[in-house]
Length: 468
Image (cartoon, rainbow, N blue to C red; front, side):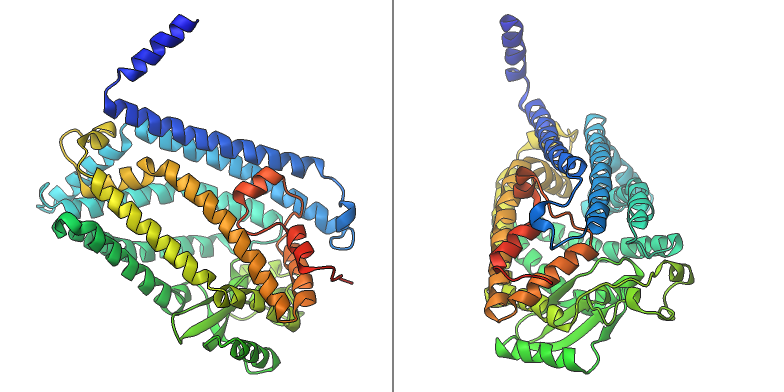
């Protein structure tokens, strides 16, 4: 047996370097998948075996909500297992059967029909991107439909019709292409003409694109999909403006987004740079705005088919709780979490472009994935950023998850320092109920995946405030 193992090891060691790279990528990919599957299995056991509300949650969550959240999260976990298995299998088959060089060859055939030869690499790269994203969109569509119209529908979150969903998917694909194609073509051009220091110019370009997209997203891109309306004058707006002023947050506008036409999940965020900050509140977050709390008909632009789905149940937070949630979000700004995340992201981006510059000339990387006679820049970006950097990306992702949990505790503490501990306490409970969050988590699954601390940990950190 040991002799057989030694022979196999010698065979592997004697493989050409490009074969070693290829098999190392496959082995690492499946190792990560199996690790994730193991963690998900641990969490599914929690969902299956925790049938009753734990004693310490008795005053936080009723039995009915606890059971609903358990079944919802169990369905999501089972769906995630099968969709993850499909995705991993699909990716493996694409690599084993030369899917990437095949699509590149098809892209070359497409551009050749327009009289553009191999020397027009950027045009072939754009054709490749369109074909690859179309393939991804079509293979992912059945999973997305099942998730929306089976799981989310079953548990009362989906508010979309199939027609609205498909129209939204087409719109997202078109908008993505309108951004992706020009940005990619400019990036490839910069890499081509940038000389020895192209990685610096490429990094600066992606930094500029990121800042522009963050700036224009909520004003020009998000309104293509959702309706944004200014928060009407009244007590809530006055309180938000007063709270922002008290911490020198340069608030210019407050919007309510009609998220209820898509889902009953709730959210809130702020955006903008320098002295031009805006706050966006989902209508499902606001007790006074959520369509689920209204006795009358939904707004006129809600699809007719959705009206029957809007049930008269209490959802969202009252004004003091909304202010507490915003106090948490503004804490991220005041404590510099947003800036720190941007700095970390850009340091990582610069490092990756630098390493890309070091590795892009290595022909064996291209040969490993079926490119024997050419070294397209776009393919090099894909190979190096997606495959070669994957171990580094996994470590970085875990570190950022740990950092994010630390930031969440700090933002909660900031809201408590503003005198809003009891309101944030009750808001977290309400949001957990509205979104059917399951409050019991496996410690290892939580440590690896949760960018936000589990509910109980956050409540304990807020102190001994009690919810009636």
